[in-house]
Length: 261
Image 1: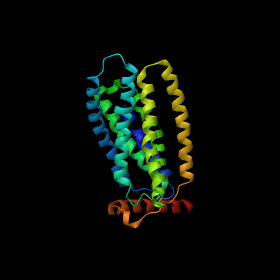
Image 2: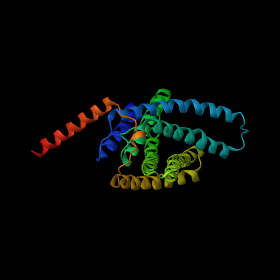
Image 3: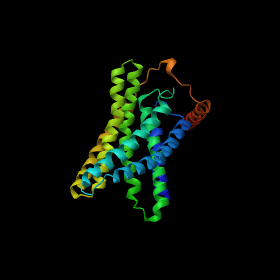
Image 4: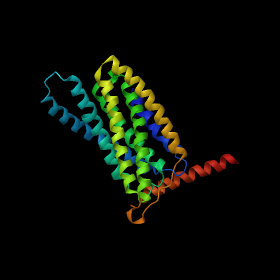
């Protein structure tokens, strides 16, 4: 069961990293994002617990759907996606490795997988083998879908900044945070409601969202765009990160040459 909590997420990071064919991101940077995801999850537990306790003080037991709505959109979606977005912005926005739009999707997936693996481990500690396997897999898949949208718009925002289009930058930054919150909130609302109607909506919603995310992912990979950087607004990359990336790139090229012979 522990393997089910860990392995799918790790394989997803590796798969997305390999699909970034233009210029591989530093494994060290991705590790930082992964760890940041773990920390965001820990903060999320604290904030969500405090928020729900505060809400319960005003809850009269009658407005169940309203309580579910607040739990889904505010105390789950807003806190989780907001935390991930803040960590993403702090770690990558001024890092010179962020030089192609597809990089943003790799970053968000790494961050989200760190969050969800930590969440799965907490579930395992709390419930042990009694955890329903679907609770380990479905949130991971849904969050990856949401991450694709966040990364896509985040990358467009960086392109807009490079072109000096501050209006487009602001619009795409808003899309990068608001769209994931809405999508995540709908998912949580359907899951927490316990209604048959919401379950049907949930199934349809997941199918539509997955199809849309696959289309966005394919388009983002095909149209991977170079980002123009202002040298005065660039944070130098960590020397260790660059050395590790160069070493891995050199190993891949050596392997390719050996295969050609």
